[in-house]
Length: 232
Length: 117
Image (tube, rainbow over all chains, first blue to last red):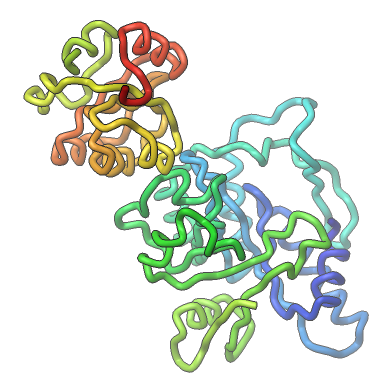
């Protein structure tokens, strides 16, 4: 998946807002934001394709936590701290899948050397605090999944965890954790978690907002001020 | 076997000495897992959990699953907040430098099993 291919596929499938959340890195967020801007220029008109810079942090408990940010600077600052909390580079050993980095023109720059598939030393509490400190929206990812979901790893919802929303998969109803998720009463975000182009828009969340930006997404999740969201 | 006997036999370091009265509890089995949902669903009541998971939820899950105690392997020790909560909830915590595998083997050799007979 290259930045240009991602934004073309998102556009083709009618998406208006996407979030880029690589595992333990936001280094490709800015190139995708740039690719979206190029796409709009190339089409000469049409709606903006909004790219929210983000990250999917693997915490020390091996819980996956999404962070969505208002700007690339915030995502990159968090990414730099996450990089320091990862195990050292593997030194040429085969990693789990590709970790390509791109420049702002969408050209391959090389490979990320850090093992992005590893767990960081950040606890879930510390990762949530890190995302919030940079103005981001922390969202436990695919909480209904048996692997790396919050409920699978930690059994019950941690007391005092400062998150405003949960990400769920389309298979929520069949998950053993469906009851626990419902009992929390937090807003749900449903995303494709696309790891390949064809998975983009496999499912989505539809928002009714005044503007396509993170602050409005927050309001939409809470269904405040006439904003709303539902799953498609 | 009581928790006190098990701790002595395996050379465990007691992280919650405040809970001395809990050490006379009979240990009814053992379980080894880092997935707390799995512990909730399958650990035997009255058993001892071996884990490297040091999140606060270990205490919550130990209460829900009625565990006799928890041993952190690989020399792991949880944050002081976790220790305080464990004392408040009456869940004895221990740590050992051994791996989960080795400690589980010794617990099995001592007669403990993963499921109630």
